[in-house]
Length: 376
Image 1 (cartoon, rainbow, N blue to C red):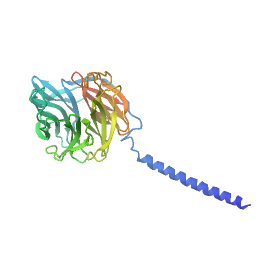
Image 2 (image 1 turned 180 degrees about the vertical axis):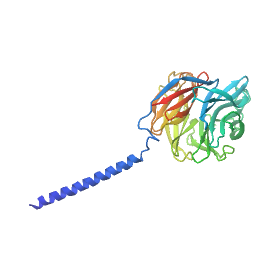
Image 3 (image 1 turned 30 degrees about the vertical axis):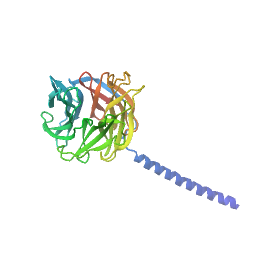
Image 4 (image 1 turned 30 degrees about the horizontal axis):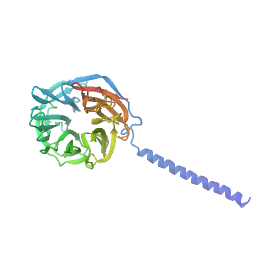
């Protein structure tokens, strides 16, 4: 046998061993990569398809409807209503997951002409107390811009039947700097978070967050979560949902050059810091708008509600808007499966999750309405 005939089998054996080692290394690397991808508890392999279940149900005569799940299983709802010359933040209860509603009382009542009372949001704390945050502004008349802007928090210890004043987390006396649209969240570290919008000028508005360690009695200074690096964008109407663990996503509308779009930022530390600004939805057509978003997580899917005038193109925002939602299965990186939930004219949609495969979509469409939406 020649040297060449002796060397070739040895070289082939060494090459095969090297190839096998490389193949094994690739397989192990692939396994690590796959195991690092969150399971279906956080992200689903296939984006859920939304569909309407039954028809819309009246919550009452009013606008800006919101709701929260109580520890006793009931839904506590709230909306802005009117009675004579007064604005009334009205509370309602559902014992059947939103299929029917019963009025139970009110959080606050003010004279409409001299007060701007609106944007109610309700949340139950781990200790059982229920908080309601809302805008509570003073003004000279219903046609005048407020002279004092407030976010007020009231408290109920009987599941929303009666309410008492708790705190005023934010106040602005400069007529330029309005504050609006509070959103409450129980953080994973046991603190309470309050998100809201603050105007810096006619063309500049930011999303802010304050926290409380005593159930909403006192509050930290405000942190900016979006818009701080922009002076030509109106960020507002913030909603927040958990992606997984301490990973959060906040959605908000942004007005730039007279056009509104829906955008998001994310946090990996339970809301302490925010970044990764992304577009969630841009209205179709030319110079149409999409705004007033909210967000919930349902069975691993993220769902964003919003209103848009893309189907009417009236260019008289907010006139001509219907209410829709989109779904993400990858933590908010991509969005799709858009569906219209409420026809023109629909204002200020909000949501609450019902179970792992459905949610309640609330909107002002000739009064406060609730529509169940299934995800499949």
